Length: 332
Image 1 (cartoon, rainbow, N blue to C red):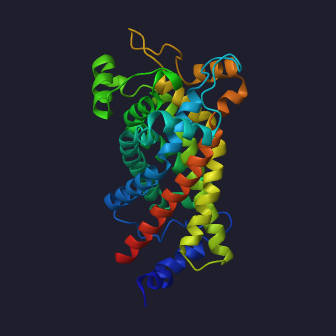
Image 2: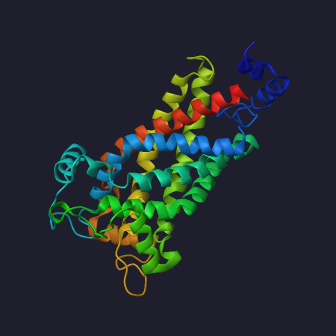
């Protein structure tokens, strides 16, 4: 008998499944109750999202450019360099070269490792403690884990945004910080704005990741639970995780785009001599100014690459994470 079968037929699992059978308290599906060793779980979450980041970073570059294009200007009053996902990818590749499509990758990998290691690891802890088994537990756990991850990893996202936005004058959009690289960006920001300057824009990042994380993890777990109970595939099949992750990716893209636009603007804005943003004073101020100058559709700039990036990124990261956790439990 395999370890997976033992887990499925153990008295503890049977009692757990019977207790969770009530529709008022859905059963958790991110793995069996015995949790993966916490340090390993954090590492698996980081590794899964870094692997996904390598494939989706070009779409992140395009998304950043589209969200900064026409910043605080009415439609038709600015030059349009990027007209869509495919055209933007072609323009960036033609002008900046193939390496230009992977701008900010190093900072992006740091961000993914720290933020998602903390986020997924924290959510797994909540899952093991049974918090996610209650109504709203998955949503609250996902939001809290996302907020913690975004707070800790904010400096890496700041640098990533700066690097992905900067390019030659011919196709430049938004403020150009002109960093020489990841290390130079961290040092320059620290020398100019101090330690707190590395956390500039975190007030936009926390609600962004809270919403995205809550929707992603809640829809992933609930969808996987539904597919598992439908018995379309064998328990813990990779196809079950793939379907759940696909649906989760669509939900995240729809709900997260406005927060993503605001976060990008707050991170990339120039700073005055008093170390304050020249364009926005905070999340609410950015939201109002974007709506006033660009209309409600301004909050959905870059929706195409947001979806094309978030959907596969969610699919890849959730699938990698789920499969690695299952393997870790089997090995244990």
